[in-house]
Length: 275
Image 1 (cartoon, rainbow, N blue to C red):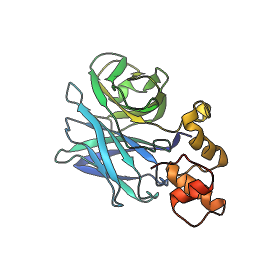
Image 2 (tube, helix red, strand yellow; image 1 turned 180 degrees about the vertical axis):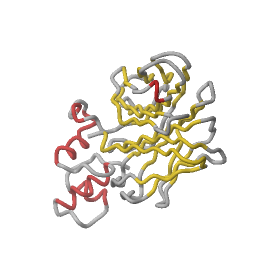
Image 3 (cartoon, rainbow, N blue to C red; image 1 turned 60 degrees about the vertical axis):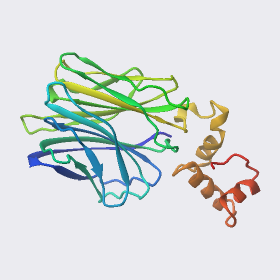
Image 4 (cartoon, one colour; image 1 turned 90 degrees about the vertical axis):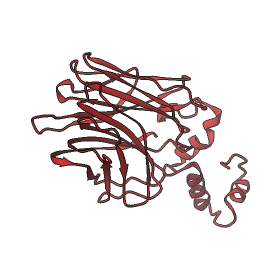
């Protein structure tokens, strides 16, 4: 498994310094939530928050070279379940905007620390765009997330280079509108550059962040020995939470309800468990 679900939202009204959105969907504990945000104007500090105690990290952000588009790529390891009625707030931290375009997706396969390196690139007059290289990560398998901020006349965004679109959306007020797209791909190269095509040239910005992904896409089940434990859990139907959470659920289902986590793994005959 990989991408679990998606959500998009827009705001077009009076100038504000923050805007809250409720997804209408449940985002379970253990998921990696990715948020791409585009607003109009030059905004230098875009963050996210909720009232549940989850921690959101702005991995990379930037202002398009003409100063008319600001975009950020934000991630959150969900430690407290986000319900459909719970708000996620986009904060501009002293700046203001009256056009917010938000695209979200959540993934079940980034169970390690959120390690990443990233870079941004801007483009002013081309129908294709590149993030620049993400650099190298310690592990071979990476989830590469990329955000694109453009004006609606340049939409839609079409991911290239093997990437898949998570979601995209435009504001629709009739003036100073903005469009955002979120895309992802799995890579095993030491570094990677995210790319996409646009409907036409014009104001645009693209950025990417790479994170260690320890669970392969469904098409990659069983491809490497190091994936055997997680692959077996997926095939057995234990598809929610971290590797430890899934193994604990498996222990309970098998009647191993007492003892430490390590003791239960040993009793089950497994010597491979997270520390």
